[in-house]
Amino acid sequence: MPIIGYLWFINMEKDYLSALLRSSNTVFTFKELSLIWNETDIKLTKKRVYRYTKMGKLYPIRKGIYAKDKNYDKMELANKIFTPAYISLETVMSREGIVFQHYDRIFVISYLSREISCDGQTYVFRRMKSKILTNTLNIEQKENCYTASKERAFLDTIYLNKNYHFDNLSSINWDICFEMLPIYNNKAMAKRLNSYYKTNLNA
Image 1 (cartoon, rainbow, N blue to C red):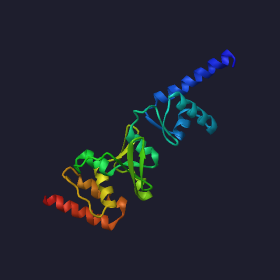
Image 2: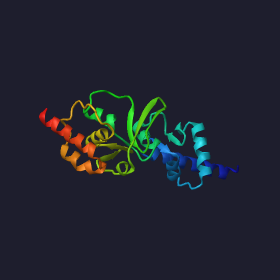
Image 3: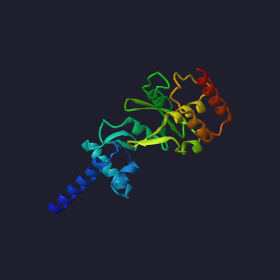
Image 4: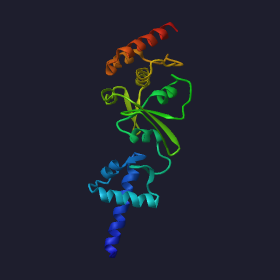
């Protein structure tokens, strides 16, 4: 390769790597890498990904998903294994003190039910109907991660479970819960919500 062509190639490689470093993402799907590099040729993207993984510039997590390094955000990965998806259920409720048990698994709402172990972490996906899944009410986006509010996580839980024991519902905003109820369009769930509400009032 002529010296000018070699220098051009080296500078282009630096630009591609700089684009990754500038990104706030810690995890990238193959499609996201193509967009970041503004690359429409799938074969070229595949070659670049292969080269960077061999060089240690990209860390392969699972097929089609990569990270800058091993210190990636596992919550961000949970959002990208299956999409659309958002963090919910016990992961949110444990953090918010609604349930007291600590969970090592990460619980995710998506379009299918599946339990996956990936890179030493277990992800539990629970299926939700498309109309509920794609409704973003009380789902927050923070640091490249979609996460349910505590009220949304609570409602997801009683939608998916006929009987569930909650340790502490004192922080729940019941007005928000009743406002969100129509999203689920489920009479049995509405009865469960009313029961939890009345029990909490009398506690």
